[in-house]
Length: 466
Image (cartoon, rainbow, N blue to C red; front, top):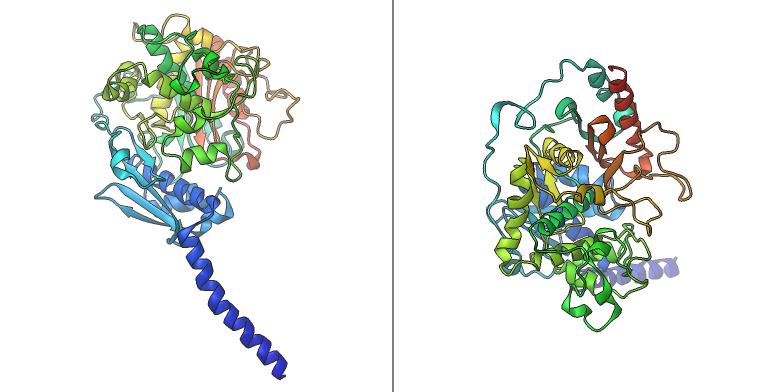
């Protein structure tokens, strides 16, 4: 019995020493996985609180913890509404994450703690809505879906719209013929994150610079740090087609190149540009958020004035198309996160899809250069026909094997192409049907839902009216 008591006392003494030592270690040198989780939590909560007007605890529970890594369930959040900042940490203490709001450039994770530098990338927030309240979409915000009961029925079917739906908008012949919003306070004005659909918008913005004579798709020697090595052969076209040849790990399961870039690096473009070249530019397709952020840095470098570069997306794209809710976020050093971070209302996402459908023309004004949209949706050789420049030729893969066409089993028009983002964000553009279908939600791949289900149903319903 004395031996047992001695062992218990020894273990208790060990715990007395070990627990404070572990806490001190987590405080002074938290593992990168904890830092990524804390920074991710801060960034997502910040954007949804200050851009979408949501409650922090709701965002933490629904957007961060429910679909995420088990570690995220231990994160706690503190929001400073006066300063426009969010701090997070494991149990609210360890691996502190920080994000700050900057108005028109949204929120940025600040992994190095340099808040002053991050706030230097600020521009004014979008002006109050100027649409004619009485006008039909897209000129205004009114919609009239009464004549399309079959579309309304589809959008009310959980098996068709899928789990976690936040918004669905169907646009036929330039008018909204059906829309549905998720439970809670979701609605037509709430900004939603497009995740990698941002890559398509970034490609369009690059097109506006080509149209303005500030950029060429054949331009190489793009960054000074690439001078003197084969990376100098990378062109703007290579960046747009995700065929730069640069190394980049796009795995979101832990600490990887993409999670490190988005949540541990204040200068995302600098981090991605420092990657070594694995393939000759133009010969290998690699889905890389790093490449898309480099593209942002390249087109921003076309401006001598940083503020002019920050204002360009609104001046050249969002305002002409009436995307008044759109907020394109930058990193902590002022580079637009062209891979991932554009927030806009569902109807404004639909406006962008309609712009592509209309070959880059809006109300008689050419916003994108002639032929640019056609080039965007022309599949590249390196992608084996799956990807163009910012758009996909097939719908989301989800659980589809790599050697199988993602749209197998669905009856979709051959000219359909896609914008695709993380956790169920899609916009499908079908020129032959004059159709745009927006579907946004919180729908992780593990749920197995494919939005091809919705698009197929909508096409059949509209074809049945003819």
